[in-house]
Image 1: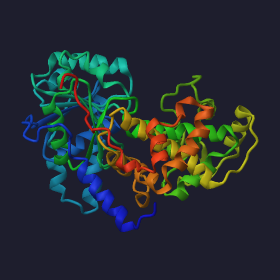
Image 2 (image 1 turned 120 degrees about the vertical axis):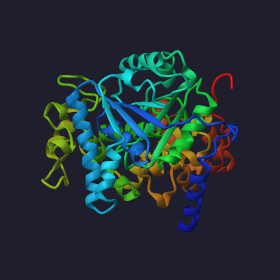
Image 3 (image 1 turned 90 degrees about the vertical axis):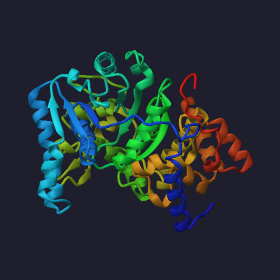
Length: 433
C-alpha cells in the first residue's frame, strides 16, 4: 500500500488525537485533585520527571536516601533550567520560580500529604515492593501511587499497598523533561478516576499519553525487545553491529540497536565478573568498554563521540560466536528487525494491552524515534503488506517459537486486511469493572 506524505501526516495527527480517548471510561468521571506531587528518587529519571510538574506550576517534594544524592539531583535540575534560560527560552526569575517549587527530603513519610507520588528508583522488584508497602502505610487516603517502571509487573507492586485501586504506572521516557511520550499503565485493580486523572495530568504537563496494559515491557519496550533480540541473532550469524545499525539508519532510525545500547550504557544490569545471557556485552564490559561514557562499547568513539567500527569488538564477536564476518542485504536486515516488531504489536492487541493499533504507532513515533515518513509499526505494516510480514515471521518462528506469527497476522495475510484496522475492542479494564 502506497501513501503520500500528506496522508501519512494526517494519519499521525488523527492517531495522536485518538490516543486521548479511553474506551469504556465515562467522560464525566470526577478527577482527583492534584496540587502536590512526590517523587522518590532524584537521579536522572526522578529529576527529569519532577521538572515536568514544577514547570507546570505544581509543587514537588523529592526524596532521596542521602543528602549528597539529593543535592546532586537538585543541582542537575537547576542546571537544566539554567541552560534553557541562557538560550533565551525564559527569564532568570523563571528559573528561581521553578526551583522554588522543589522541596527536598530524606524520608518517604514526608510525602504523606502529596496528592500523587511517583516512584523512580532503579528496576528492582524487591526494592519497589518495599517502597510501595511503605507508601500504602503513610500516604493519605485517595493519593495516587504511581511507578515509573519500564517493564516490571505493576500488579505485583500494587498487591503490597493495601490499596491497589490507587496504583498506576506512569512510564516516562528518558530524558523525562524532554521526551513527549507517557505510557499510562492500567493495572488489574486501577480505579477509573485514577486513569482519568492520570490522562488529564498528562495534558497539564504537556505530554502525549497512551493508555496501555500490564505485560513485560508494556507496549513500547515489549516491541523494542523483539527488535533487539533479532539484532543480536544477526550478530551471531556474523553480521557486524555497525552493519545492522547502518541498515536501520537507512530505514530512518537516528539510532540503531547497538548505537542505542552504547548511548544507554552497556553496563546497565551488569556487574563485574557477571555472566548474563549476553556474553558479547559481558566481554565488552570486562574490557571497560561500557559505551559512549567510556569512549568504547560496540564502537570506538573519538573526542567528539563519533562512532567508529571497532576491530576489538569484531574480534570478541568472532571469538564468542565462531561466526565469520558476513554481509547481508540492508533490506533483509530491516525486514528481520522491523517485521518482528509488527508481529509483537499484533500480539499486544490480541491480549488487549493496547487500545488500538494507532496507539502503538503513537508510542513508537513519540518514544522511540520511529521514522515519521513510515507512520509507525502498524502503518508501515500496511505499507509492506501482511503477507510480507508473515513470510518473515514464518522463517524466524521456525528458528524460535517466541517469534511465531500471531494468529491475527495469519488472518490478515489471508484476507488482505490492514494492521491499522485491527479491532479487539480496545478495553483495558480493571478487574471487576
